[in-house]
Amino acid sequence: MDLLLEGFQQALTPTNLLFACLGVILGTAVGVLPGIGPAMALALLLPVTYSVGPDSAIIMFAGVYYGGMYGGSTTSILLNTPGESSSVVTALEGNKMAKRGRAAQALATAAIGSFIAGTIGTVLLWVLTPRVSDLVVKLGAPSYFALMLLSFIAVTTVLGSSRLRGFIALFLGLAIGLVGTQTGQARLTFGDAKLADGIDVVVVAVAIFAVGEALWVAAHLRRKPLEIIPVGQPWMGKQDWKRSWKPWLRGTAYGFPFGALPAGGAEMPTFLSYVTEKRLTNHPEEFGKGAIEGVAGPEAANNASAAGTMLPLLTLGLPTTATAAIMLSALTSYGIQPGPLLMENESDLVWALLASLLIANTLLLVINLPLAPLWAKLLRIPRPQLYAGILFFACLGAYTVNFQAFDLALLLLFGVLGFAMRRFGIPVLPLIVGVILGPKMEGQLTEALAISGGDVSTLWSEPVAVVVYSVIGLLLTAVAVNGLRRPAPAAPVTTEEKELVER
Image 1 (cartoon, rainbow, N blue to C red):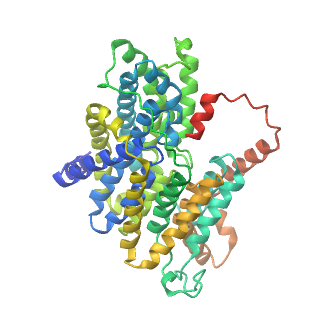
Image 2 (image 1 turned 180 degrees about the vertical axis):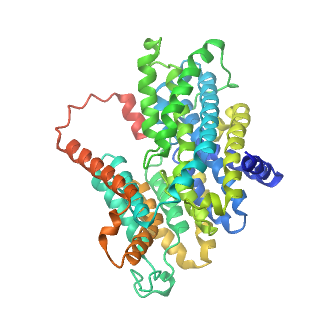
């Protein structure tokens, strides 16, 4: 409790509170704008870590993460265009509510549900993070190697419709992570001394998220102006509260555990929450026409999942989402290694971050409820000007890494790669995880083999490693069995669903 109070004392300093407000506002803004999620925002902000203290930077990044999760719901409700993949389910009922003249109620239940779920998730983090750290500190290199292998398998088999594309993305990321002379031997440097230190993850992340997305939008730019449903001040009536509070709690129960799982993310719990509310509702006739439960539950699951991703990130150093992967990169840029010793070596930073999550969550509610009409106006920014600004900051951020024009050439190269990945439906998360965790996994493997004198059996010499390999075996078996099944006849796709997917 004393450490938590000290964390609040550090997080509530004027400087850190300012960074928290800035993060929430930026996060909401990028979440509102379609196609610009928190992962891209954090990638563009990574160069900030070179001039700002670690506590301020991480607190701001946490605010961006939470704000981005909420901002995606605004776009889904007002525009029927999810700003984040985790907000797709919100669009199903939220936009219907808006078309019925209940946009204010939809935005209110999304904001309040996000606050409640985020608060419960943060409290769970306070309780679980020290206990999980005490357990994992006893793990050796073989167990960490197995856990990282599980992360690789999970992000490639769970995400996307094609496992092959997932593995392609993973191997691309691992190949990028191999570049350099970190092991004493030049690998994939092509004789160029500028690649001797490897490719900075800032350049890769900014290129894949920002440049790739800008090229994709430029190739599919629509000149037709967006039709935005007007919104007043968000509010909820007594009946809305009565129908929302149970979905908020059930959504939280779904979101936090899935966020803490490797490759769990927020997509699955939001979908499960929607299905659950559809089955339990006392107003089944409203589903498909604008049921408030279909907004309250998924949005709570969305934000609870965001809190859950912090648990494996801080205790194991394993990111479960692309945004968490960027945050991991930010921590390592300060020489801070997330993992079991983080609570011991950087306890002040960790508790300040955990305290700031509650502060950011509160700011999210206080700021976003009054500013909902303003966020709606933000959607009117012309796409050419918006993405021109993004490309400018992307180039500026990549150049400030080493102050070399060579990094701009790499930025363009990986930006084209990011565009190609979107064109062929290749998921981005496996690539980013491969770039960040690939070298770490190689280090754990080297350490384990060095200690055992080259004995490969050391990789399954620890109980945790054996359990993880068993989970990997079950996961691969389930994927293989599912792949052998004959696909069921596809249900007819409605015109509205086609438009949603296209957007």
